[in-house]
Length: 243
Image 1 (cartoon, helix red, strand yellow):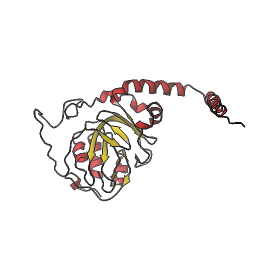
Image 2 (cartoon, helix red, strand yellow):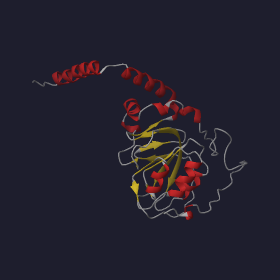
Image 3 (cartoon, one colour):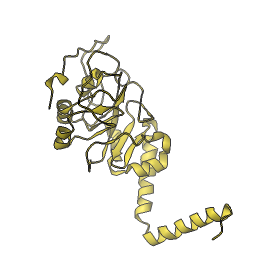
Image 4 (tube, one colour):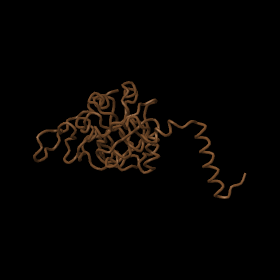
C-alpha cells in the first residue's frame, strides 16, 4: 500500500549565492555539477554486454543489483548520485525533487533492512521524468511499481520503510553494486545488467561501442563460428591440449 508519509518535508540548506533549488537547463543545482543530458544520446541503443566488453569488470555492477520486474526496458542516463546511511532514506526522497528529467538516480544504501522508496516515490519520480532508480538497497510496493512500469534496479524488496533524519550532500561520489559512480557518469541498465561509463570517457566509449556493434551485426553465424573455433583451438593447442 502506498504511504503518503514517504514524502515528509525536507528543507534543503541554502548555499551562499544560490538563487534557487535547482539549476537552469542542463544543470543539477549542485555546485560544480553539470548533468550533461546530451551526453547520453546514443547510449540507449548500446547493450550493456557491448559496454562490458569494452570497459571490463570494474564498471559492471554485481548481479545482486537487478531489475525488480521482468522485461524492464533498457535505460540510459546521467547518474544523479545519493548516499543513504543505514535505516534512512531522506536524501533519496530529496533527490526525486531535484534530479533533472532523464537522470538515473543511483543510490548507495547503508543496508537492505529498510526500504528506500515505495509506490508514491516511484510514481512521482516517473511523473518528473526520472529514467530509473539504481540502488544496492531495497524498495517496497513492488506490485505498484511494476504496474506503473517504472524501472527499478535493486537488491530486492522489504515492506518496512526507512526513517527520514540524515541530511547529507547530493551528487557526491558513491559506490553502488561494487562500482564507483560519480555524478554525470552514464548509466546503462537492462535485463543483462548495469554498466557505468565514466563521464570523461563517454565519447570514445560510444564510438567504440557503435563500431563493435556494427561489426558484430555484419558477421554471419558461420563466420563467427569459424573464427571462434580457430581461437579456441589455438588456445588449447598453445596450452598442450590434445584431442
